[in-house]
Length: 161
Image (cartoon, rainbow, N blue to C red; front, side):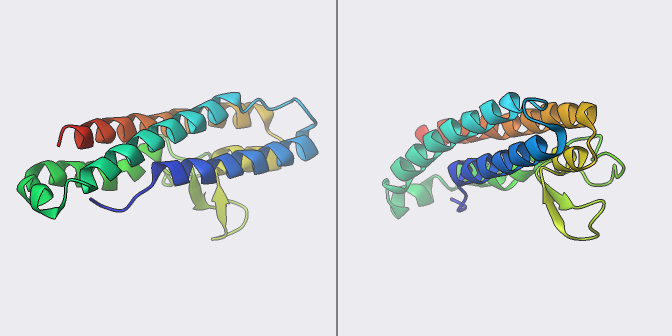
């Protein structure tokens, strides 16, 4: 099974939300930007990640001989794992650059190639565009929820091996 941790991703995303919260308080004033939907999606991903980790441990515990016999099922699971990054994309792309689809990582619009985390939200906050920050928050939350749904689905697939 491909090495991946949805739970670790959730921990990292939680840090990004905290950074944006601090930035929003400094830039927009306290209580202006509500990122509770993003935090709830991250919590959902963390829960799904723990279920994935538990199912993965159980599957690995079956041993290589059993897993070798389940190669076809593992191919489907591995494809689902490597495609999980696609869940974090948004069809419309990021504001002012539709060609960047990733909602969690992208080069900054104002920083050249310097990476921005949760760029749609972060850059809107930096530009003091509260409406855009709110809209992007909903998009990021939806993307993270898609990732959580996939993690749960993969955990279920691992459980039936």
